[in-house]
Length: 85
Image 1 (cartoon, rainbow, N blue to C red):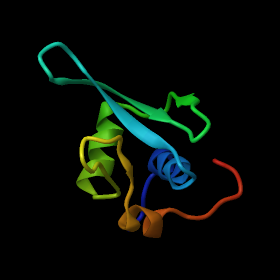
Image 2 (tube, rainbow, N blue to C red):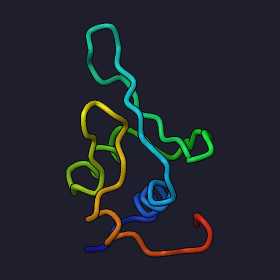
Image 3 (cartoon, rainbow, N blue to C red):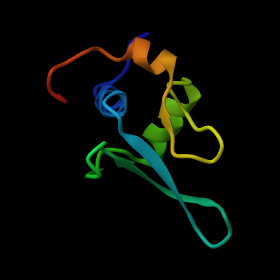
Image 4 (cartoon, helix red, strand yellow):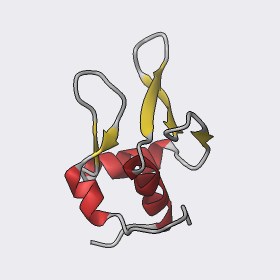
């Protein structure tokens, strides 16, 4: 299965130890998603549509209310690259 460049970039960041955190509004409804590197820097390339696409393909998952991490399936789909391009 081919994945887009944006999906590849996010999965590569998650494979290196990054995480995706959900931001909810006062009504507990999903308002925004933020992607963080393992160093704590926030990546601006993740939006709601891309998050839903990654979740639908089962490349990311959350366990026990913790931030979203990459799954084994996501690791199989990501191409190894020395940089994040």
